[in-house]
Length: 551
Image 1: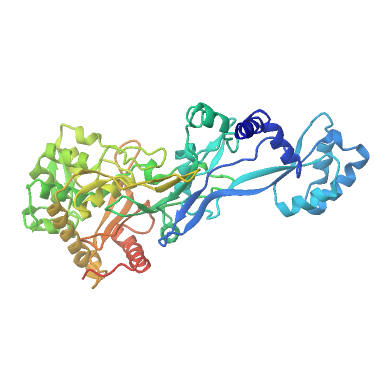
Image 2 (image 1 turned 90 degrees about the vertical axis):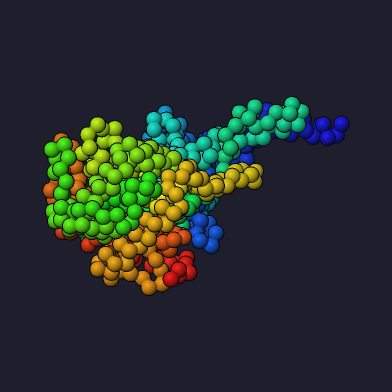
């Protein structure tokens, strides 16, 4: 009977009179209206497994007054007392204090606890200190497009961009901390889901490594400044698992500050599509290799151009190189060679491989508002659309979808699912660990090894005349310079998208790096603008992770 009495008493304390007791507890220190804001946290995880706060809560107070409780003769004294602790505009304060019909006038937000304690000690009439919490982003701009932020849409306050939006059901808190209905749990056998707590609340832990992210963002910012580009993006991913170690986009923003330029809030890595140009050629050649249409030593007669459906396709320099093997298609980035490989495998087979790479579909990354690529040309009845697609024009992909497709070249031929959250830790101690997912096989393992061998030759011998070759590390890489399309059709003659991808160590790659830069000024080719930034990031990762040499 004693145990039952205790349980019944707890039921009345927690459920029947819960609000009354909570309000009494809050009034012991402050006057308050409503529950303090609460929300789960987001953490980066560094390579040692240590947590670094990306989004958390700060605690403090809101300062307000009840005008009717401040006698007219006391308004000056109340103002002076408050102004000693926190800067307040006098005329504004006196105007608010005169609103005797208004029960609540907020004077200041985010008042530190130490200041609130001194104000409380003054015992000023009509002064209210309300316990508040607010969202803070300690790492400032770091991975801002991935993290996102919270805000109001109408009367609803929740995640608006990035992970804050994607994981709202995990991070959000309904009515502050939920109360446990012990009576119902013990005697009715009802779980949380029947009681209306079907959404598990918790904190999320990211694959993004903060030091790697910082290095990528510094590189992107430097490229923006040097080339006055419209946009720069950098992705660092583990090609075998899809774990994203860096997602950098410039220009960026601070999630904790007022948003001036709303256009920077969009995450271009998953929400924008681009014609990627020549970095698509390795995908075309790998598909033709896999289908048995070509080998590495297959030759063709490069006249410098090809005519299809009345349209002339030329190499970037408009020059022909005579009879050359497939390796030269990558070494010299020959448009005609990519068209040749596509034609040898046939349009239907080419389309099938491009679809298998993920062209035209979302990657499924755990970030909101991802868009699919634009691949209408792969449905065409004309040869010209397939020809341009073979070297990355006429089809448009997001940077992340491009990175995922290119990763299949080095990871044994698998299309993986990229992800940003590696673990969710729920209230109560339960955990959910996100496991890597291989969605499908697109290339045979031997094809992956062969195209990798060709891309290593590109990096060692062709890129910069061989000056970037590393004696102790093999790197598979390729550049791309794509024409930028006009809204009204056609292409600009002086605007380009530069791109660069590479993975290393080439035959068992730990990382793939993808860089792109939109409309750089004063430089024509991606090999001139992005080679050194790529090499810098590759060396950084090799040193930071102490990757052993493979040569």
